[in-house]
Length: 266
Image 1 (cartoon, rainbow, N blue to C red):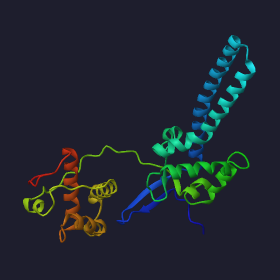
Image 2: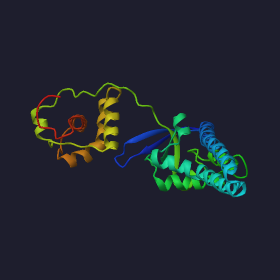
Image 3: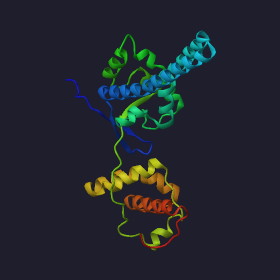
Image 4: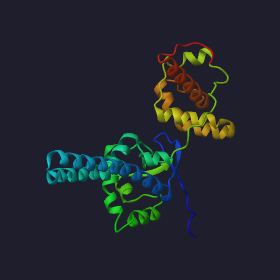
């Protein structure tokens, strides 16, 4: 029996924290692509009209319509090339999404969940020429329907996928309870810094603590706590408490934009 289609992909970080990404289906991606085409070719049409009026006006003054027409055709062809190849790759390399994808709430990431760069954006868009064969993105659509992550040929070569990022939720600040004691602060460095992935993983864990049993909490905390403990020199501390303390110190360091002094309270 064939497994049901699942639009959620799970990615495990080196710290064994699992993040979930919801994949974007072909219909939503197609609509985003249509919006991008309307936008870029709409702008191209306006530019073409402006060039046409410029050619007619210039010809009226100089009487050399043919040479101006040839120059305008060359300029239009250059603009078509830019629209066809540079537009998509540039937007995705800089922001991870085109305006059409942004409007539909989509983003391009690597298959490891990281933001894409110039290489990935260029590769996935160069292969668009193969995806449109023979007409109407038939190859690209067939490839998406045959892969678990809805990847077209460009995605497979570049190692990318299109996801629907979760919208930021206005959650309440995480409060350290009970507050840090003087002994706990004395065992930790004055300054604690976390990279974005560590901060996101620990915050997700702390926000879910109330939904987990004590055994499950400790099991999850022990996946990442040893890495943090080695860095801050807090071996032997309860892993759940360590993550809460480190997150609180890192959050305060970010607010203060400077070292956090060892003092009681939270």
